[in-house]
Length: 214
Image 1 (cartoon, rainbow, N blue to C red):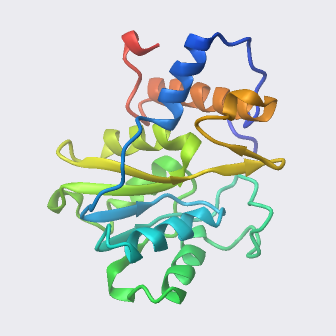
Image 2 (spheres, one colour):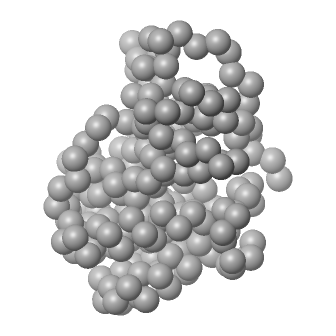
């Protein structure tokens, strides 16, 4: 099964203004980490998903951890993923959390979701988000905007969302806020994120862009 929008679509020539717009849209606002009630870990096969979760807990930034991720039918596992294509992502993430001596009782997880939207919807079945006020979330830095929009669309309005992200690498190139525009790989990944935000916003899966934002 192929994703609806290619991971690396062709990119038009971008102006400096468009580069700034895409940076803010896909990476989100720069927000300093702070203590939050709980941590939401989006599913994925990159080690950053569990490494940042461990860092957040051991730094005293969160008290509870909600882990998501089943088996994605469209994603290609990270090259360092050693658990095959049939192992739910959440189960591997939880394994690493427990190995880091994070208590089992502070971890909740679901292992059925196959995409970002399901990560959030299925997490609502195992955790009451109405009883917290702040939620830190772990994801790749260049998908922060889309992940934030998914949380904002489906979780209570009173929640404050704080990103705690990591840079992903593709073909040996790190996709970061400051350097994505310097490589064809980076530009293609960010343009793909922009197309996904438009698509899923119009579909109603995530918080849509305002007309003034486009």
